[in-house]
Image (cartoon, rainbow, N blue to C red; front, side, top):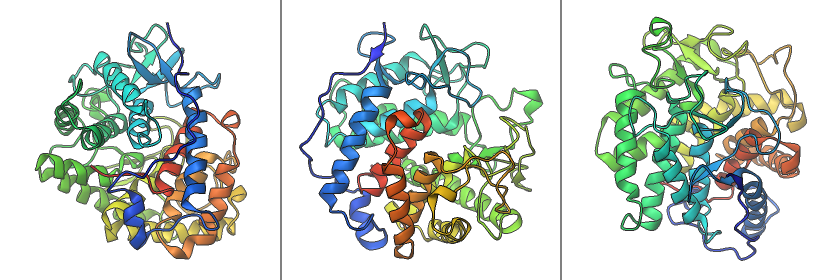
Length: 414
């Protein structure tokens, strides 16, 4: 039987930040929302975390198991998921990251994290037990009609990073050997989700077997987790992960130079790898906006900004600075004018909505990389934190929380 997670009371005592966090790095190259003390920022974070946790963190699918319920709020979830979906590996990765990153504020976070590790072990992809089956449905089974027992790279990458964080935070001498688990996942990702010849991130373990491999030369901009790749290289001693990081920046610059020189936007999906990267055509994989800056690419600014905030990588600053400048001009500094899907030219698509918290929160992280964005960051922060949990869905609420963790200085590296 599943039920919404309600074990924790609201937490009002704020504890010190984790060492090696964005807070430390940002003293040199990042900014925070102005007019607020660190304690006020932390209180906003903890308040929203408690609300998010009370809705989305679910105990179920076996004793001591936890997962992020993507439909427990009564709202639908897209992305090609099956009917009666309860969770996806993307959400599981987010949940594991949130649990370990918020552990200094939540004494029960480790129990939830370990429960998520158990759930992860219960749902391996068919290709390798170190990867997670991407979609589960009611009854806690892997979805059959959408190949739910295959993997999606983004979830696995976040799970591996979260396990490294857990090893740093708690050590690996307890009930779960976090480091051993992390190394197993990283090895499986490299074997099944990284292109062996050109070192780009593929969209999953299934690409060689679907439609005669037509998706094998594809990457997804939301998987450009360049700070993760550095952490994997450091943890394993495997220099190939530095190659993955370098190749990711090469792809970004190829797209930016040829297809978005005025905006620096990335499309949801990039095809033609490795020699001729270009935006995917409409309906290539998920829908009409596969080649636009849309609901997958929305995560790109956050993913890349972390490499500057944590690692001071100049390449991240170089690719995000023009994007930040363009979006400030396009919206005139007003988040309510932010479209939720743009052509790479900067024109909103005909069906684009406005002011989605997903895009607001991810661009807020990007804005935090330098002081010239202070007014823009302040506007984005106010807009995103004014939203209630009830007003948004799993995706928007979860990305908002991840953005708040980053902007307040509590994102950390292993």
